[in-house]
Image (tube, rainbow, N blue to C red):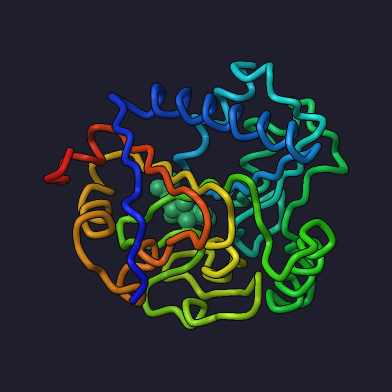
Length: 248
Ligand code: 6PG
């Protein structure tokens, strides 16, 4: 069993202040990547929590980010049309991206209009391989959420997707609708440079305690499988989500 690096936990009063701090951190990472390599890559999760961050970014809190040098990808997607209100790309586009200075050609949603999720997973892996030329994608910053069942991305407990060790993108069945999902695999996530988990609300307190304070196994608690081979994991949580942590 690999010795997991001790993750950093940063506790904020509420989701609003947490989102502003994450926007600051995103700006620092983006600026450093552009300085050293001329561009930066960001991968977004979906769900409700990131909406506050998207609104913070849209409000222009991060004018100093060289957005024209940014490439935006997705961590996971529900297999629904992009116009569907449950689409992760649709949420990010309407809350932020459509009014951002990011060049349209730099925004890379997961396709959800191919015959099968498997076709779409293979297609997205081709998109990623066109941008990340090494054996694994080294995304500068991946934003992840945490489900109350300890899932992250579309990696759910007992999922066959958890055992994927060679593909960058796969498809998965979710226990909630929309049940068909696309997701980065754990090894693809674990080769990134920075992972920021955004966790808000009392409903996530038990899952957060399990990930951070138990030696939970990945099959039962997929978020505990996020353990970067050469990178940094920061947990950005609000007081409500941190309510069951013994080490504060
Ligand atoms: C999704 C997400 C998923 C999300 C968690 C938390 O497509 O739903 O990518 O992994 O991050 O389910 O979702 P909330 O932020 O809505 O609680």
